[in-house]
Image 1 (cartoon, rainbow, N blue to C red):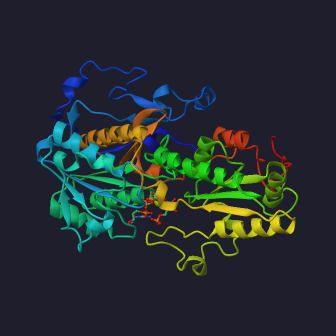
Image 2: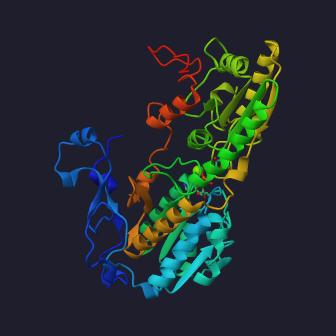
Amino acid sequence: MTLHIDDLRVRHLGECRYDSPLSEMLTTKQTSPHYVAEGDRVLLEDTVSMLAGHDVPPEQVPSFEAAGPRKKTYFDPSSVTAGIVTCGGLCPGINNVIRGLVQELAVHYKVKRILGFRNGLRGLTSEYRDDTVELTPEHVRDIHNAGGTILGSSRGNQDPDEMVDSLVEHGVDVLFVIGGDGGMRAATCLSTAIEARGLDIAVLGVPKTIDNDLPFTDQSFGFQSAFASAMDFISSASVEAAASPNGVGLVKLMGRHSGFIAAYAALAANGADIVLIPEIAFALDGPDGLLAYVEQHVRKKGYVVIVLAEGAGQDLLEEPGLPHRNGQATDASGNLRLGKIDDLLKERITDHLTAVGLAPTMRYIDPSYAIRSVVANAYDSVYCLRLAHAAAHAAMAGRTEVAVARWRRRFVHVPLSLMTSRRNQVDPDGDLWMSVLETTCQPAEFGVQREGEKVPSGFC
Ligand SMILES: Nc1ncnc2c1ncn2[C@@H]1O[C@H](COP(=O)(O)OP(=O)(O)OP(=O)(O)O)[C@@H](O)[C@H]1O
Ligand SMILES: O=P(O)(O)OC[C@H]1O[C@](O)(CO)[C@@H](O)[C@@H]1O
Ligand SMILES: [Mg+2]
């Protein structure tokens, strides 16, 4: 997808006319390796060859608006009511973001009021819109010490107009939506409905997902805490498998369409022999298939450790996502329910190893929600706080239909249209997957050949 600078432009509600309470801090600020001055932009691409591909002057090269405080604000802070909503699956650090928003808005901007809508976007429907919670610095002082979200979350679709009615009823001027891809889509719908009614309400997204599947952000908050937690389960599976006759350690991790948690956790644990992710198809049978490789491993090493992303190998299940597998084809938000690839692998590996005289001891671990309900680690805590600051500044400056993100280590404004334009996935030709292959020594693919390519039989 080739992007033009216009694709990266951010919507403004209007001219910034009020002196920002932070303006004094900004008087001497200039762009440096550690700061991007107001008005400067952050490049989308970062290699010489990619930049050389654009035959345009530097100011037209695709770039993001830099995040951060402005000298002037669009809103008069003292008259602002802010709303916060958290939606979708849990993710470490949501409370940190809520806390950071409340502190920045209350302490520095001294906004009039901050409302938390409860239980996700459901909290903006007519039925639940009065079940709000007033958020103050005192209220949020210690919430970063707990996982989850103090506001609650949910899945399920809501009518944008009904949600806008709730914002109007509560006099909300800026709404912060902390959500994943679905949440960012919902924020876009809300913003469209707000614009259609000619209302002056800013909608800001703070991208949240342990799957790290949102684009145009280096990594999403909470991802690091989640894969650090997943790492411990891989280590446990390795210990168990190594101590068992023909041990098979199988760890299933979250990751519907993107295998980042599996890849990073496996690298962190550095004890996995095989990593299977949704982005790379694999065959079970045949001389280059997964089962033959597992057998070879168990014969040579005595055990094998497999890290499996939940969305991997869905094509191997007869009817992926169909009702009989999980009761319903999709969840309340329309996300496809996945087939149980872990069940298939357990069965096929056990059958295969038994047939070749290596009856296995299966050590299966599904940490499931345990990795996303943890408290944010120190890195994520800092990251969440800084994202919250960036979101508060963007809102007060009248930016709307935009998400805050960290891009190549700088904080930037990403139009929601871009945030929802594609999915971030592990690139089979990228250096992350190369590191996984170097670490596990597994072949680049199991029995599935790309056109005109010979499948290598492994590095080690
Ligand atoms: N395409 C869409 N258009 C409008 N709203 C949507 C859309 N998809 C999801 N939503 C809304 O966004 C909310 C969150 O979506 P979803 O449950 O998919 O989680 P998410 O934000 O993607 O988070 P995660 O994937 O990390 O769990 C849902 O309650 C739903 O109302
Ligand atoms: O059971 P829930 O809450 O729908 O969440 C499950 C999904 O949420 C995620 O954590 C994030 O979308 C996925 O990895 C996982 O499949
Ligand atoms: Mg999602």
